Length: 86
Image (cartoon, rainbow, N blue to C red; front, side, top):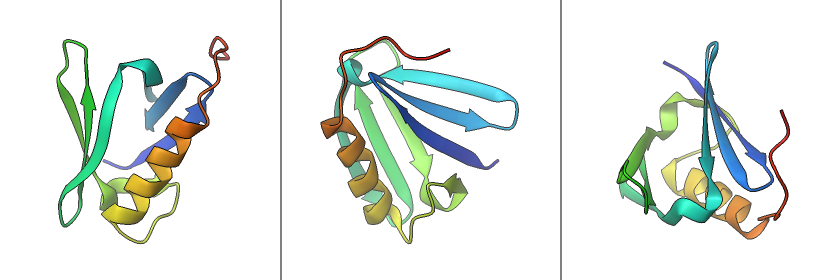
């Protein structure tokens, strides 16, 4: 399954086909590369961690897992204390 990831102020949104998942940036404790193609998003909520295979992310277009981790960490620095758009 392919994913799109977007920055929505205080949230990171994940889209897969017609499904959407929103993760509050305030719950993210860290974003790291754990293997060749896998990103780990550590959260402080009941989910524990989210794992994303970089090759399945179509937007943003990145070259490897490190590039995607840099992009995601950049989104974290753009944190806006505003409600998400609907």
